[in-house]
Structures are given as structure tokens and as C-alpha cells.
Image 1 (tube, rainbow, N blue to C red):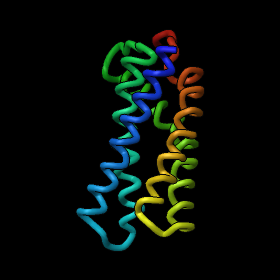
Image 2: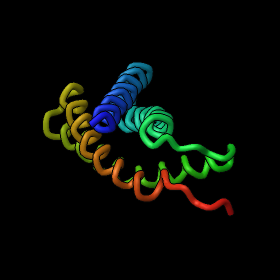
Image 3: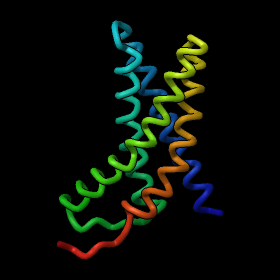
Image 4: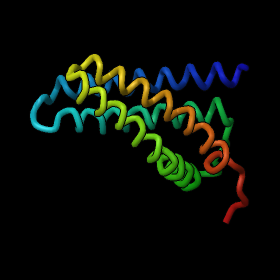
Length: 134
């Protein structure tokens, strides 16, 4: 139960980091393609926050060195591609249907929640596993 609580808490923190980053980005630049740019910025910030929290507190994963940490982060990012498509689909869908910043963020939160559930399963099976050093 503690794992579920912590994972949910970290998903919420990462989601907040994502949404706040998007909002800051769109306030800095509100021109052409600003929504897409803000989504990329938010995704990058949320990804790094979630990786650090998951690695340390959820999976208690120990990296051997910088190269191993980099490889693990790349694999973590690859596993996040599918979940990012879900998240962006919800965010853009809500933006298209409702046409407001607030509803776009509601779509983002829903997409992130679904994505994080799937991402945990992928990370547990493929990312944060002990492998023999090459």
C-alpha cells in the first residue's frame, strides 16, 4: 500500500511539474505552435522529475556509474514514448473539443494518470531490473 501511495504522490508531483512548466512556457512564448512547445517543455521537466523519484524511492535502483545511469534513463524515456502519446492525445483532444487552457490541462492530467499507470508496469518489467554488467 505504501508503494501505491508513494507512486501516486510522485505521479502527482511530476504532473504538477509538467503543468507548471507548460504554463510558464506558454507565458514566455505565446506565438505560433506555443501549445506544442509547452507540451514538449512540460514533458521533459516531468520526465526528469519522475525518473529521479522513481529510481530512488519506488524501485530503489542503484546505478553503477554515469554510463549505467544514462542507459537506464534512455530506456526509461523509450518506455515513456507510448505513455507520452496517450498523454498528448488526451491533452490535444481536450484542447480541440473544449478550446480552453483549463480543459487542455484537465486532459493532460487524465492522460498523465493513465500513462503513469501503464508506465509503472513497463518500468518494473523492462527498466529497473538488475542486469549483469556488460
